[in-house]
Length: 432
Image (cartoon, rainbow, N blue to C red; front, side, top):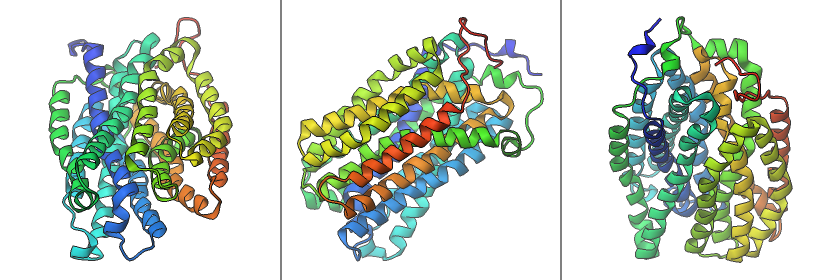
């Protein structure tokens, strides 16, 4: 056994802040692609398609990143369970940052023909591969350092990273859209947020350079030889349940942040700037509420909040699409805000919940695979399915509301089958 007494206990605030910064940077890389897919990638890389088909094709390249994420969780989960959580943070950040910068350098279809969308697919795959490892490493390093009674609070820091990354990605895009003409933005302005990822990656690596390895990892005597094999053999039901449970969170987030942006600008004639402000406002509130919801998870348990969030989502999806269809900024914001509150009620506690469900020797692989499979179910398919369903309906996309409600009910059923794990003094502590 490693001697854990030689490991200097880090400041939880410093460690959690470094995890937040890293996840924010990696999700910035991932989200900036989604915004570009909704706004410009269709006509630039699929110009021979109709507008709707071009958007679907662009969302198809967007979905490739989600397909790659479970593969990334397998690759980096193996590293995290065999070699440690800390190496995962460095390698995943380098991979995602390099792929994002490269997207900003890809010539368009008019310049290199079919090679352009092919390169987009490859780079998007690499983005997803890196992000698939990032979440598991950042969350586990924080969770395994945190005191059990405040694990939910401290692991909510990396859970705020997606909101920060989204706001940063869309803030840069919004600023460029305001400063540049439509022609300038389409010609070169959309590339700038991708190039900025290089600077952010360097900053993230510097922040993570001095983090200590997880003490829980160092206590493990017998590391799994092939973590994925153990997860599939011993925890396959748990993986499937967590993937199904998390699907609605991803579906909500990408319905609001990606599909609605394309739908409102193309079908309703709402300006890009108005939509980005409405979406960013709801994400800002979501990020701000994250630590408060996590504290509730520490006090009342992870599972009750997850069940409440799913139930709220099931009730709110039809009102959300009807408010979106009005095209009125304030009403659209209210629709998005309700969806984001339901989303964060679940996802604020997920970073504590998933690691507690898996034994330490396969925790990096199991938690990350379940988390990222949920992304395939909810995130990869939602923009594509919602775009197709909205095209078949009238002004109010009721089909999209039905689709999202169905996913919410699926996730509610999966959470109902999962156990509670909160290791608080008020209940018998789980073995960590």
